[in-house]
Image (cartoon, rainbow, N blue to C red; front, side):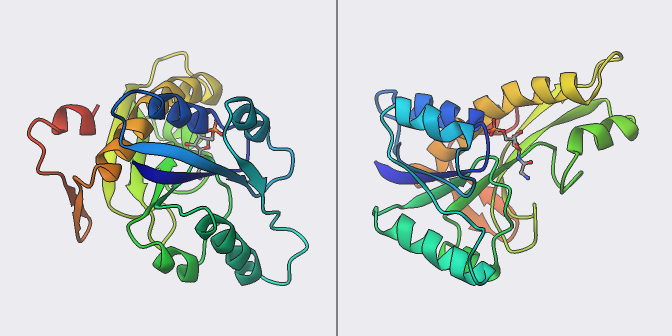
Length: 210
Ligand code: GAR
């Protein structure tokens, strides 16, 4: 089983979905560590209550972004981690860190990439009149919210939606696709060719595009 570090900044509902999925027999990854860059983030307590080791690497009060990332890297390597899942981790990582973990960092983004990179994705999808919206799990590259797509999940936009109701609908699909994407990567069934992720698993499109 691959050892996974989940990086969070907030409530950690995607982290919880990964922890729960990883408990299933035969799941190819275990959540070995949860790291928050925000002291007291809600997800830390939740992870600890699930018996997962947690730690905080505060990005504040460090000399530079690189000093923060060196500490993050040390903390993760000390636990023999194979893969990193960003789950509501609201810090941009530099090319230095991302290259050290090439094709071993996954991120979940609350939109159907490459549409709506960045923040406020639900309000922007509504403002654009989108009828379909969703979430994407992708490998991290140094360009923000870009990188080979592993799994996407779509939801309808309803007439009465606001950003809150739409976010909630997207979140339910996030909790499905993140464990599926991690399972694919952890079982070494993905290969990356440019921006395309291939699996060689027959029928995998049934769950790679929900
Ligand atoms: C999720 O909706 C995730 O997709 C989003 O933040 C939320 C975190 O919720 N991530 C980003 O916006 C990354 N830029 P969670 O802490 O409950 O998983």
